[in-house]
Image (cartoon, rainbow, N blue to C red):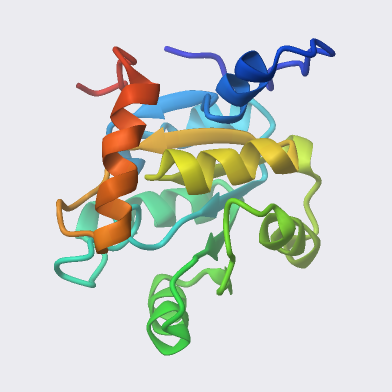
Length: 185
């Protein structure tokens, strides 16, 4: 199991090394429901920022599975707040999902830019040290979290259905991930 500790930022000037740090998640877990809520709590997490498409809601069904709903309920019972941070430009769909799942939302996030993450932190009233971002994309979710200075958990996408450009990013992700193992596989 990978630690939930935030990696320290080196002052090294090697560009390749810095790029690798931006694309390195704090943890890799097969799916959101396998993220241990008690472990999050033990590591001081008070807020989970989570991506929508293919992290909470599969692109092919557009409805969150029962096990995801149960995980969100466990977070609420542990008094860990949840905010959906989505790049999806279909505001009505994103807001409907957030309402259905009972979480706050920041839409039109434009990740990997960290601005939406910072907005979510202010909205939720939780400092970055007590926050983790969970998502299924290395170049949007993980990079955004790292740029914002928060811990990140990369999960596998729930569905193979993706936007055409996301499918291209998935190919590049494989090169960056190499032989990384995901908890639960």
